[in-house]
Image (cartoon, rainbow, N blue to C red):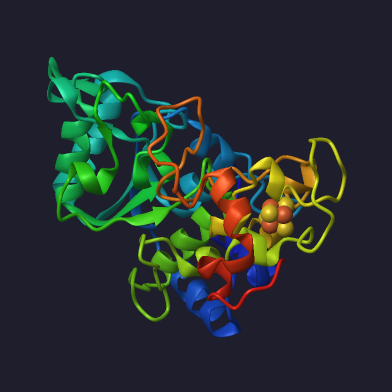
Length: 331
Ligand code: SF4
């Protein structure tokens, strides 16, 4: 864990293009990191698979930091994270309590919020002999947070835990807390650099929704979610595959969600720029979209005319107002 603020700055400098940081912003980041003590972060996990934390922690690079956990622990005052912290039980809960009392922290929420049975479908911790539901923990900690980050689609939009039949009535963080404004770092899981970028923006003092930190209508950072996957896809205009396993073929007929999914995966790439879903011949599943998951495995929330259905995409591809402003074109 021997990583310094200097190393973090070096990482941001090396990754400036990917992270969309200007020279001026890097200078401001250097100033911010020169101050002692980073912002306090409380990271909660609810109805989720822990994949968002795993994705973030797997951010292994030849440049510093070697892992995103280093960023969280050494550059940011991460006071509570169920997987990363050494403390457990009452001692761990005390860390969250101390952050709550101080206020002004960043609350990162991973996972949806089960709301049925007074939240008893998911427990955060036991404190002084009292069991605290995840729903209560999110509600209380959000009330004194400077910013609330919804990490991944479950926290941002409900995701797989909120897909039908949803007996626990899982909701997104904002739906479970009406009036709460979250920054939605979409994805199942989100790309680690998307999370890092948001943390950097907060370190720079840029407020979510400001000109320097714009959000789209789903409160996703436009830095990464302003274009469809399809618009950036190298397979656009390629021969359309009618079976899986065909290299370099467009997967539109296989139900690819790229035309209706906003994310920069084709440019960002995954697993330290090794690959991404479509380059591995897997169709885009639309995991950054608010209505994800689109699968018969779940009680699909759309209808026959839903723009995410494979038949809709195939039928409307020549006049897709979502991507092409109705200008036509078969690509
Ligand atoms: Fe790429 Fe999918 Fe668009 Fe085809 S439909 S070009 S595979 S994003």
